[in-house]
Length: 202
Image (cartoon, rainbow, N blue to C red):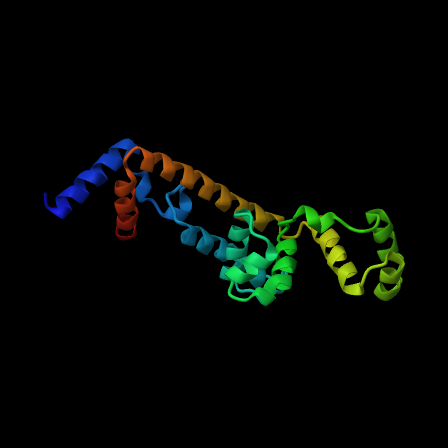
């Protein structure tokens, strides 16, 4: 059977099963569109660019690197592993600060070796960081990290953008479920062909 005919039949089969034409609408406007991880990260990167362009926080990481950070965080990777994925293990502290700014908290972020209320009271007292860190028995740099966590937890400046990112991640989860289901039904090849054809259609 000619390859074009075979593709056509598979596309028709997939179209019939997925109820017609909505799949040809622009991908970013469809909830649950079949997208790969790179496409999801590119979409998150667009949101990250907005955050950075509006000056909500500064980091040496680029929008796409921040998007990969988000993806890797949800994949269960720690900060060192994420930094390694970005090409430089030395970026782990940069990754940690950016992650906290994006409210991607870990349980360890709040495991302080002192009472949190005591720390907050001291930070609001007007005393310098060196004296406060001495009282709490930690280094000034460690104290600054805990202060950063507390500040970002209470800061709602970029919540709107974070909700958009959350929506993208939820779309990816739905996409993966749809893809697995379709593949198990023997439609994997049809989906691959449809995704490839979508670029030309749209």
